[in-house]
Image 1: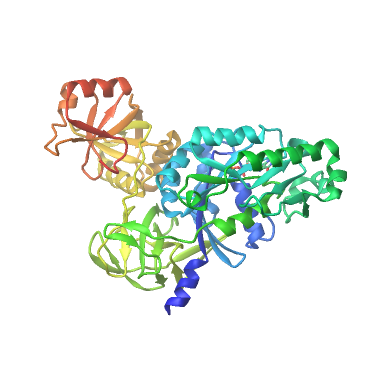
Image 2: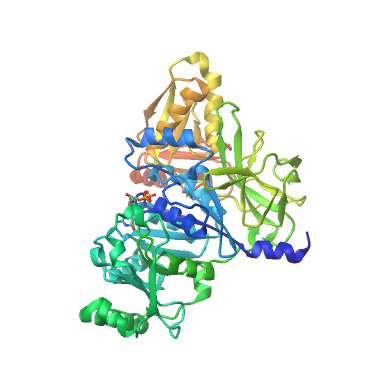
Length: 543
Ligand code: GDP
């Protein structure tokens, strides 16, 4: 393929994720993006998850659907001449480890907030990852059709809690039941403002019906006399007042700071009613950058260069009858072609990637080619690990994907000692998928598991039984967190000393790196008093 065509394909890629707290409306917004993109005719087809019984049964249901549903990591759809790659993960708080990794495959994010709740716990955690990666972040305040907090209040909260600048690109006209529309302020103060009025009559229609079509709007200017009629005097003057306040009080939009993840353009709307979505999408298409150079061990990797990719997710047993494993890779540069030979940097082996798959709404399809920015699922014959780099032949690696500090810990007790081998195989496998972390106590004894969420541990137990026929008992450990430990001077660490002095449980992670599990901050402090010259890090990354 000639360079110009390659550059053209890459320039139209937009690879992003939606970060939010469960229930903020991520599924709804995703449906609407697909709807506007023309990928689905009727919204509501993405995932039916209403009225779920319990988190665990929901997971099992999800598992059954795995491979064909939105939970399969990426949705590709065209929109306004662009090729969107929307990365997604299950919305449970408990699956955050996966979400964290997925964010590493994204070039930008949409932070979705519920207007009544503002910045919630899960949003904060996910935001931290985006911040670490300095990626551009759009903010969409959802559910404006419902009672919520004052927009100025929400702007302030995002600025204070997340320490990021906010630039309101749209602004709501009325809120709650009387939410009538938005003003599109654009990115420059002298840009003419546009008013989008939503059809009030239709807003009263059953939302299920309304939400399934692209919402009709009237677009007009702020000085349109008809607005006074539409909004009444008080509403109109409030709109002018707020608009003037925004113009005077706010800084100009700084494109460079946006790209560095320091300032976020903010939008208001209602995903369910399709209100404010179009204006958001327009701005998103204008401002979301195509793939940029990523950091590699031998310097920046130009997206226009030869093929390179890294693996950010591995999912085993997607198809029960075949026991197959799928590795998800993010193409970082160049072009990928079906059946192409690639270089697996960690093992130094050449390999062919079988069955490259992409995901459009409900379907999995084999793809012939992919470009920088795309995410593909490939068959994993058991050689891949999360973070592996694939290239066209060069020897470099992409930055390691940090694994996050687990918050829940259990000891795995065997019910049937004769199935020790199967247990080991199952645990190794699940740890390799990266949804849990496995530690081997330095003093010996049963393996310890750590997870970001409690539900993940339930899922492990369930999968050990159903996929490996092993009954395991998970005994909660009174541990709060784990730290990777090393000597500051790089010398040999006496790991068992932590056990002797009873200041934590020393263990090794799957790569043999030293860790200590602590019962709480107080115990970590005791350890710090007991031993000097030791470095404690929160994630394996940088340990
Ligand atoms: P997720 O957990 O973030 O994927 O959230 P969902 O998309 O499933 O939405 C959670 C609930 O909020 C559902 O009952 C939605 O119908 C509802 N919802 C989503 N967007 C809106 C909105 O704009 N307005 C209102 N009133 N409800 C919404």
